[in-house]
Length: 91
Image (cartoon, rainbow, N blue to C red; front, side):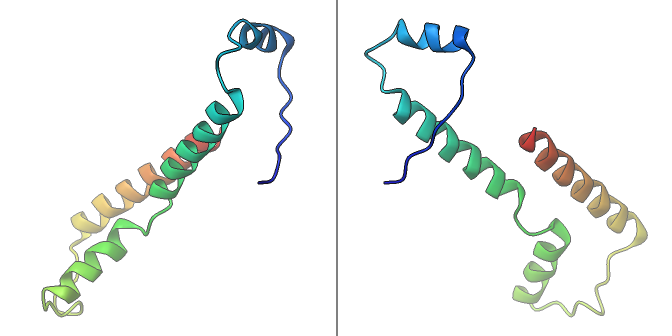
């Protein structure tokens, strides 16, 4: 398994040393894995694309069932929220 070196502030390292029973590498591995899971959820296909897939599966003709301007506005708002959340997770 590859190794990862992490730099920590001295105060944090001192606090960690107060708990030698904790396997800190496991804590870090799990935190990274959970973060990536959340990140990958946010990076999923845009909602409009998913809606198109559902329509196809239900037998709708995408050309005959185009979204209204209001529906497009809602989809745009949801996509902006998704992108904003992704940016928050990257900070």
